[in-house]
Length: 117
Image: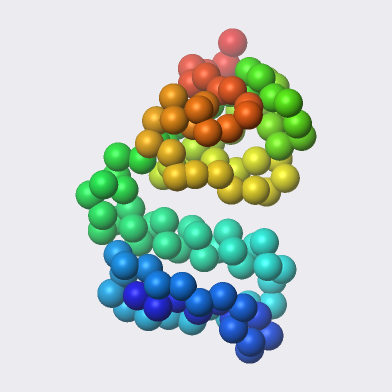
Protein backbone atom coordinates (compact mmCIF):
# COMPACT_ATOMS: atom_id res chain seq x y z
CA UNK A 1 0.00 0.00 0.00
CA UNK A 2 1.21 3.49 -0.79
CA UNK A 3 1.02 5.90 2.15
CA UNK A 4 1.46 9.64 1.64
CA UNK A 5 1.96 12.13 4.46
CA UNK A 6 0.70 15.56 3.33
CA UNK A 7 1.11 18.77 5.31
CA UNK A 8 -0.51 21.88 3.87
CA UNK A 9 -1.17 19.95 0.66
CA UNK A 10 2.50 19.13 0.08
CA UNK A 11 3.81 15.59 0.24
CA UNK A 12 6.25 15.35 3.14
CA UNK A 13 6.76 11.61 3.14
CA UNK A 14 5.81 8.70 0.90
CA UNK A 15 6.24 5.09 1.91
CA UNK A 16 5.16 1.64 0.85
CA UNK A 17 3.51 -0.56 3.45
CA UNK A 18 3.27 -4.15 2.26
CA UNK A 19 0.64 -5.40 4.70
CA UNK A 20 -2.06 -2.99 3.54
CA UNK A 21 -4.23 -3.27 0.46
CA UNK A 22 -5.91 0.14 0.16
CA UNK A 23 -4.32 3.55 -0.37
CA UNK A 24 -5.11 6.59 1.69
CA UNK A 25 -3.83 10.15 2.01
CA UNK A 26 -3.39 11.76 5.43
CA UNK A 27 -3.90 15.56 5.42
CA UNK A 28 -3.63 17.52 8.62
CA UNK A 29 -2.80 20.90 10.08
CA UNK A 30 -1.25 19.19 13.14
CA UNK A 31 2.46 19.39 13.85
CA UNK A 32 4.72 16.79 12.23
CA UNK A 33 5.20 14.78 15.44
CA UNK A 34 1.43 14.40 15.96
CA UNK A 35 0.90 13.46 12.32
CA UNK A 36 3.69 10.88 12.49
CA UNK A 37 2.17 9.36 15.63
CA UNK A 38 -1.31 9.28 14.02
CA UNK A 39 0.12 7.58 10.96
CA UNK A 40 2.03 5.03 13.04
CA UNK A 41 -1.13 4.30 15.06
CA UNK A 42 -3.11 3.74 11.87
CA UNK A 43 -0.47 1.43 10.40
CA UNK A 44 -0.07 -0.44 13.68
CA UNK A 45 -3.81 -1.00 14.11
CA UNK A 46 -4.16 -2.30 10.55
CA UNK A 47 -1.08 -4.49 10.80
CA UNK A 48 -2.21 -5.84 14.16
CA UNK A 49 -5.55 -6.87 12.69
CA UNK A 50 -4.12 -8.43 9.52
CA UNK A 51 -0.64 -9.81 10.27
CA UNK A 52 -0.32 -12.94 12.41
CA UNK A 53 3.31 -12.12 13.31
CA UNK A 54 2.29 -8.67 14.52
CA UNK A 55 -0.07 -10.17 17.10
CA UNK A 56 2.96 -11.57 18.90
CA UNK A 57 4.26 -8.08 19.68
CA UNK A 58 4.64 -7.12 23.32
CA UNK A 59 1.82 -5.29 25.12
CA UNK A 60 1.93 -4.61 28.85
CA UNK A 61 2.30 -1.96 31.51
CA UNK A 62 5.92 -1.57 32.60
CA UNK A 63 7.81 0.44 35.23
CA UNK A 64 11.09 2.23 34.60
CA UNK A 65 13.71 1.09 37.15
CA UNK A 66 16.80 2.67 35.55
CA UNK A 67 17.23 5.64 33.22
CA UNK A 68 20.21 7.67 32.08
CA UNK A 69 18.35 10.55 30.38
CA UNK A 70 15.04 12.45 30.32
CA UNK A 71 13.28 10.03 27.94
CA UNK A 72 12.07 7.86 30.83
CA UNK A 73 11.49 8.51 34.55
CA UNK A 74 12.43 5.99 37.23
CA UNK A 75 9.29 4.78 39.01
CA UNK A 76 6.92 5.89 36.25
CA UNK A 77 4.50 3.39 34.67
CA UNK A 78 4.52 3.24 30.86
CA UNK A 79 2.25 1.36 28.49
CA UNK A 80 3.67 -0.80 25.72
CA UNK A 81 0.88 -1.13 23.17
CA UNK A 82 1.21 -3.52 20.23
CA UNK A 83 4.99 -3.40 20.57
CA UNK A 84 5.37 0.39 20.81
CA UNK A 85 6.48 2.48 23.80
CA UNK A 86 6.11 6.27 24.05
CA UNK A 87 8.78 8.21 25.98
CA UNK A 88 8.36 11.33 28.15
CA UNK A 89 9.49 13.35 25.11
CA UNK A 90 6.84 11.84 22.80
CA UNK A 91 9.40 9.67 21.02
CA UNK A 92 7.92 6.36 19.94
CA UNK A 93 10.13 3.29 20.40
CA UNK A 94 9.42 -0.12 18.96
CA UNK A 95 8.43 -2.53 17.70
CA UNK A 96 9.16 -4.91 20.57
CA UNK A 97 8.21 -8.55 20.90
CA UNK A 98 9.21 -9.02 24.55
CA UNK A 99 10.29 -7.13 27.65
CA UNK A 100 13.78 -8.59 27.26
CA UNK A 101 14.05 -7.20 23.72
CA UNK A 102 12.83 -3.79 24.92
CA UNK A 103 15.46 -3.74 27.69
CA UNK A 104 18.19 -4.82 25.24
CA UNK A 105 17.32 -2.03 22.78
CA UNK A 106 16.92 0.92 25.17
CA UNK A 107 19.32 2.59 27.61
CA UNK A 108 16.58 2.60 30.24
CA UNK A 109 15.57 -0.61 32.03
CA UNK A 110 12.00 -1.74 32.81
CA UNK A 111 10.13 -4.41 34.73
CA UNK A 112 6.50 -5.50 34.34
CA UNK A 113 4.02 -3.47 36.35
CA UNK A 114 2.13 -5.74 38.75
CA UNK A 115 -0.27 -3.12 40.12
CA UNK A 116 -0.23 -0.62 42.94
CA UNK A 117 2.24 -1.33 45.76
